[in-house]
Image (cartoon, rainbow over all chains, first blue to last red):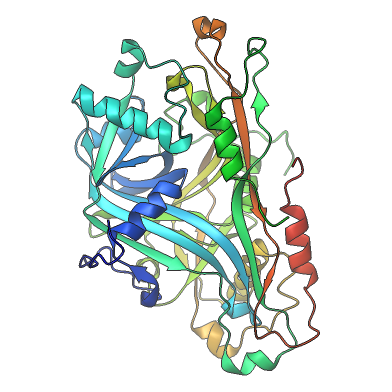
Length: 227
Length: 227
């Protein structure tokens, strides 16, 4: 997807209403946020009430996938093709302004609204399961024991098309009222990132089994650089 | 709130259905998750469709507060006392199991379902605004320029009672199938945390203005310890 892509026209449902200058309507921005986020929050309506559930997801092309057990409330509804809103949010910093009113967070958020579809093609299920594992820990699929036939049966995969979408992006810049810049108050940002600690091996690992490449690569890419 | 509190009986809406052994129904657990999370995701129903919006929140006693501009879709609905589901999730680690199927995240998630109420008492609004600022950056309220009368008018505060709630908690422990423990595959967890980088001062700070205590304290409490 090239960066010169023409943004699609947002629907009234996905148009950013508050701080509209922060709205982004190109697929590239939306995809990048879903790809970086470890989890998303899935919203749906059950008996007229809203529900919001955190879950792991993966994007394959223009489709978001997530999985669950047949027992979950969400998955039972998805079977009927319920409408969902899937939102992923990355918090990039705390913005400390001179005035209380202009304090904020730097963030990137992506939202998709669409009709969920239960995946019943085994080939598509297999692609989605691998993508979900790889989305969390790239390279792990090839290292771990593959799913058995029974495990495959015990997992439901849901697909949501990325057709109706938008993003909202705020950087870590400070924006104060003109008259406040003369105040002797420190303003600035505290950048935030998700950081990995040292891997904690399971007590029951066999002797001589080493930390695998997937874990080493994840830790290396989630280590703070400036401290 | 004492740790020996009797858990309340969850409603059918807040009962954890998938992996029910991970459900927590005591207020202390729910409060701690909302207090630690920098943002939550608010779900609501508009014209029959689900919406999920990220926002900053604060808890004061048994009430969750968040704020917004009169222009936002969410805030306009809240004026009518719409039902909302507020979910906050902390991701504590990536759990790498021996089998693909048992990969997971360590997480703590809290959910509240309730009727939103627009705050119209100026005293309650003031308490909520201070709590929201302090929830993100403790100590900052006293350092920054207080809100003016016009800024107060431009902000709507929404309250949601923490009456119908639950939490779901999964640690970073590995749980594999009995027969998989003989496999020569590394299993374990990668602990994750939200980490602060070095504060980035605004270019327009007056000369001699120092990094304030609130920022120093936040950075000190969000620095990785084991690297």
